Structure formats: C-alpha cells, structure tokens
Length: 137
Image (tube, rainbow, N blue to C red; front, side, top):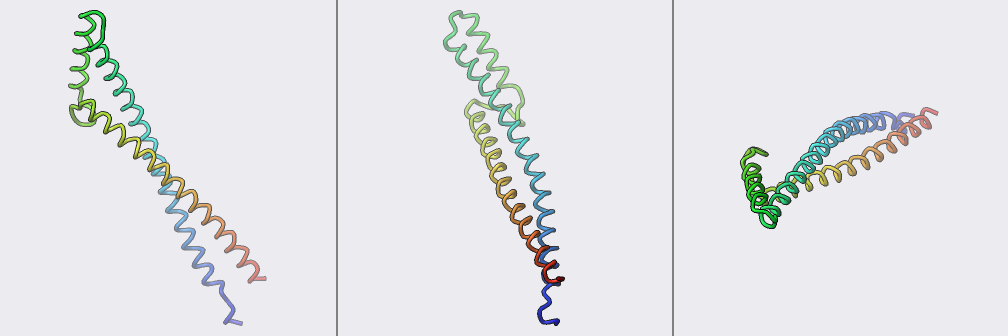
C-alpha cells in the first residue's frame, strides 16, 4: 500500500547525495591543483631561502675578500629580483615559506576531509540502492 512507499524519498535523497558527490569531486580536483601550486611555491621559496642563506654565510665568513664582495653583490642582486611581486628580505622569505607550507598542509587536510565525505557518500549510495531493491522486491 501507498503508506509504506518510501522509494520516492529515497531516490530524492539519492539525487541529493549524488549532487554532493559531484561537487566534492570538483572541489577535490581544485584542491589537488592548489596543493600542487602551494607545494611548488614552497619548493621555490625553499631554494631561494637556501641560496640567500649560503650567500649570506659567504658574505660574512668567506676566507678571501674577493669571495665576500662577490657574495655581497649576489645578495644585492637577489634582493633586486622581483619575486612574488616585489623586493623581499630574508625574514619576508621565511614568512612566505611558512605561508606556502601552511597552504599546502591545509589543502592536504581538506583533501582528507573530502575523501572521507566521498567514502561516506558512496556507502550511503550503495545502502540506498540495496534498500530500494529490497522494497521493489
């Protein structure tokens, strides 16, 4: 009889879940891209920071005066390179590095959340199907 027919509700719920899944997949793809970009920037930033660090060390501790001067010139050059839209100092480099690291981590966490949501959605969908099949009998 009609009073026990839940199939319409279930299929509506199924559609909503499918829509959520589609949105989650889309978001997952975008987060993947963001995580890759953040990781790339992090690596670039790390390289630049290491280069600045090595030059700074030479500028202070190099045995010969020639090397010291060359290192100092190198540091000036790096400072004048437009990176991330402007001249930067070593402290700003560190801050930038921390920011990229944070963004990369956050994207990873978001991805984990979405994977969990996708798994949940899949299990609900399979339950949805078996329940419907049982009811159709």
